[in-house]
Length: 180
Image 1 (cartoon, rainbow, N blue to C red):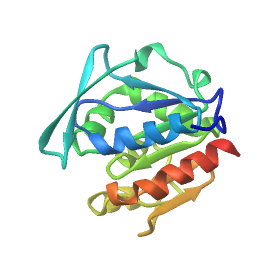
Image 2: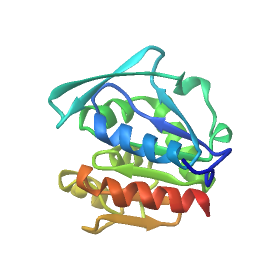
Image 3: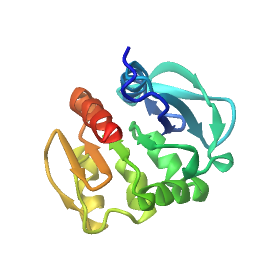
Image 4: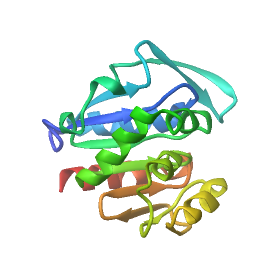
């Protein structure tokens, strides 16, 4: 463990259906660098994780509901994927507003795999260069984004990656952006 990100607070916004590795690996990487993380979700309790979208993969306790947090509480935001998770988030006005406000704050926002779906709903991808899981790319283009097929893309404060295979680059880039 290092203290490179000591004192930094990172919100992980997720709901039922979150892809387990896309939650766990960024959290572990951030904590290894000294950051603290909080799982933010639609309600108190636990969220159910998945492996490969279909297989149950345990649960994670929610630290705070999204309706009780503010962008000012955190230094960065992570949006993990899994197809069900962002679909639930983008259907919740409070979660969408939190994401929109976070992007507009200029603080780092990192979304992987299906995570960018919530960015689309928040209306924050127009004119931005992003990447995602292939099945989301039409949605991103229709929302005005320039979509590329790269391991990780940084456009101002947005960090995006395609899939769990990209987690090492995604985590390293998130740490670099948060440390800057």
